[in-house]
Image 1 (cartoon, rainbow, N blue to C red):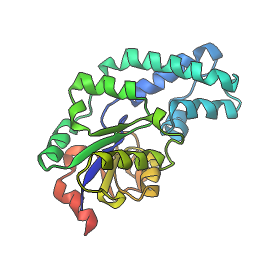
Image 2: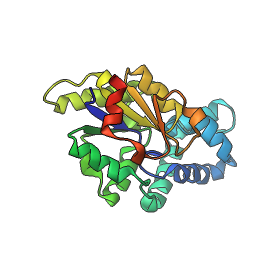
Image 3: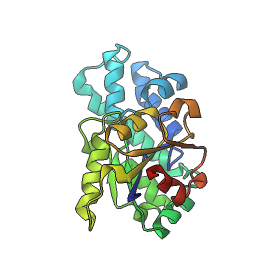
Length: 225
């Protein structure tokens, strides 16, 4: 039975993946490092900011000390927050959120972005009230594809719920393989929306749609049939 829907944020709710990409490259410019769009989408999109920077250091691409990662991540966040004010909400999102609310389905966000980044966009779009819980990058030790974020989201939901919600009563909506792998590892059902990757790249999902407007509560309930 469907009890909760847990959303990724960038690329699922907000059209902000390219804003993150541009902010990373601006923050990396003083170090003569540039990530190509292909690299970003193939290797880094599902990672937290710090995990991405750490990967660049480990690869020898970004020549800084481990102790400097935090400062570069902070610079990237500052750039993102300045430019993300205009990041649009993806078509179909508001309607789907209203549909879930009308059917008394609990909603949450589990994202590799920072809480300030998420709430900045949600508040501007007047969507914050839909979500019972938001779990962001700084709240977990391991980001996606580890299941930690989704398990913490479920724990927080259950602290607010009248009756316990089980992992297999949750549907996760993702746009990347990293997120889908994390959801499966957490024991949750999966939906992929092809905002960032083609359908064959998110084939791990049980349902694949091009827009959230294609989803219905009845269709999601069929995952348990």
